[in-house]
Amino acid sequence: MTDNKRVTNKQILNKINDLKIGEEGLNLLAIKIVSRMVKLKSMEDWFAHVNKADIAWSTAYQDLELTEEEDALGEAAKLMTLMNLFQEEEQYEKCAIIKNRMEEVNKILKKGKR
Image (cartoon, rainbow, N blue to C red):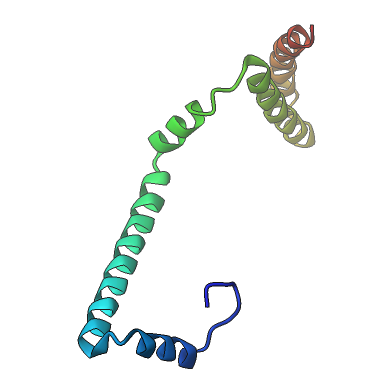
């Protein structure tokens, strides 16, 4: 019963009966299982809540320890996306600002290729 095949309720009950744990033992086991599931659900809810916080994201992002080149690649991708958006909206002043920033990012990327 430990492989990944489906197990029927009847097989589970037969296995429990083979253990001869009795009604009291079965109730104790059920309480432990439910208690553990509640704890896991609480931890999952807590993690989801904490994970949504800005500080959690910034801390996790810092833990990536990106190199200067990796960080520049991310910045380049962001700038190219913004450039496309602003070109479609014909906001050329913003495009000019992004172009200047992109030149700085390209210098970092060229430096990394040496």
